[in-house]
Length: 186
Image 1 (tube, rainbow, N blue to C red):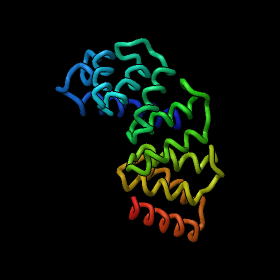
Image 2 (spheres, one colour):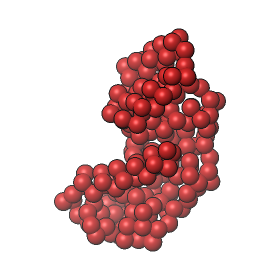
Image 3 (cartoon, rainbow, N blue to C red):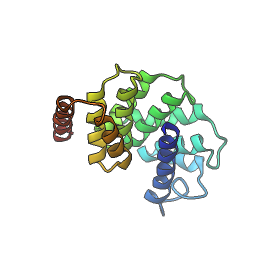
């Protein structure tokens, strides 16, 4: 399931990359050109940093290079780009281009989740469910599944349902309260 979620997230990101920037030049549409993106970076374009991370991570008209991908994602993530924060978290989870580190995974997923990234919200929940990088906590897992489901994630809705079958009514109530507080403050 984890592999399926990560593959789905990658497909969504490539699709978003292709459609969100259509008509804006070769940094944003096929054939993707790293030199054009680097020029956009010099102009201060935050999206170009993310696109370079995507290009190197997928080998889109450049050699596939996870270290280079992580470098560009990190630059965008540190400037608050939610999708770059999410992708950097995925790289830490898988150990692609960076050492595998669940605490760093959680750090970057959480930053993206705070900006409304439903995939990050889902995977923060999964990290709590599995106890990866954080203490295992079904209440927090359910809370983040709630938040991600409210953000449109069907996978989160089914994960929440499966988890609820293992929880007490009191735990579910606490998780729902926390999810409501999270959504009100983010």
